Image (tube, rainbow, N blue to C red; front, side):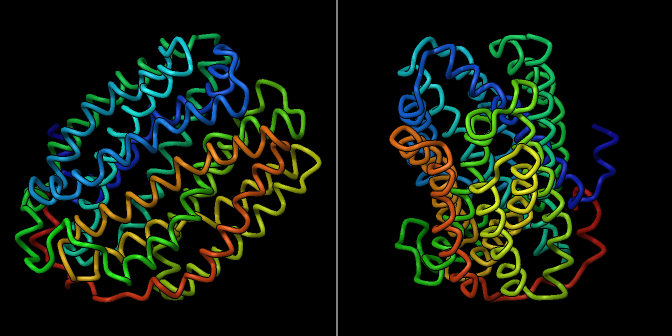
Length: 398
């Protein structure tokens, strides 16, 4: 605790982003194993995976006003506790029905803690005058890559999922709670009081709808890679058991690289041009994966696609939070709702297509939605500027 208290608000926020997806990432390489153990085909797995978007649908309409009331810091602390328990539940599911229920609870907890993280990052940006949104999401990508690699290693050690995932969660939780409690007091101020314009329950504005439409294809692609990259490598290019997890690891690594350079690109090119450049790379990468005849080319495609989708969601969060029509937490909640819906609904759609055709046809479903996102990149026009940097807010606890 004492060591973390010396971290700046920016670094504490980035650390929280890094820690959040590690346990979830350790689940991803085990999906083929869970599928085989429960005897599920692609369509059966797709139905079970619908549990996560259902949990999101039930949670985010209430999470936005709640996070606006209690602040990002409190949401992170409480969210990590529930999330660390819920993310373990899918490994204990005895059949497809209980897998659906477990994933629904996991999706509900993930949506709450991620909303808190995004609100926190926006508050720190505005308070310190430092762009950290892309870098924070880069830390998230690094965390899910680390979690995926840990999950692959534990699978290689033949540690069953119902032991491996709780072990990872148990190790991460204390660090996450200490990080959350070390966040500065500025994150505790209720955001709804800051912008007393529209109610958090009012209909989203047209600019926000455009931003949400942009981010849907980006998020759907990220979800597709999380749930189906291992199965694609196994079924489409004949990867062995030890290599099926490499697809998502490569994808997450390049997502992280793109996000770590995203704030620099945004300063040089602007939000719209950065989004268009990366959007074009995303379309290219998805086509390479669809056509790849070998593992090597498929991994190259995963890398290009990772760079392409890397900055889409962070740019959208900043754009939505800066609209100024109501509390940032309310707009970010709507955006998170759409993004998580895309992230979690996309994989079941791919599963149904793969059931009737093949996994290549399923993966190809991301190409048209990425093209739509590319054309909607102009919706990310910034509405406000960051506050000047203040020495006072650079100090933890200010």
